[in-house]
Image (cartoon, rainbow, N blue to C red; front, top):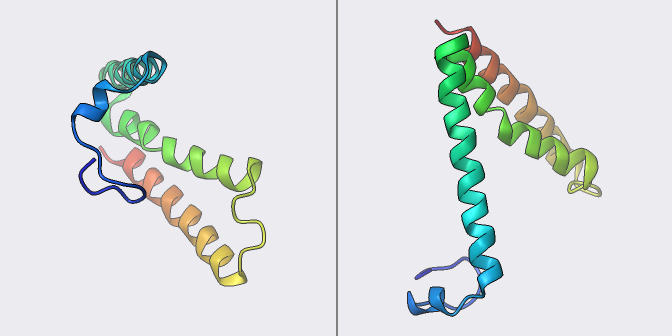
Length: 103
């Protein structure tokens, strides 16, 4: 809030000036995140923490795939950017496989 990437800095009193809808959405997001964390911990005791952690770390990969495939965020990007994007997917998937195979 003090050093935003875009826009003017906001004081703490700005939080209280927000609408109820924004606050409810924030609370809903926190609830969903907490529920996911609880399920991740429960799954860890069932299938092993390495596999559970790897599944949890796959979420950014799914988000990146949505961005590339569904929303076409890199449409019109240079060949170098697309190559680096492909390498990112390869290395990220490799890291997830390494995490899942840990004991």
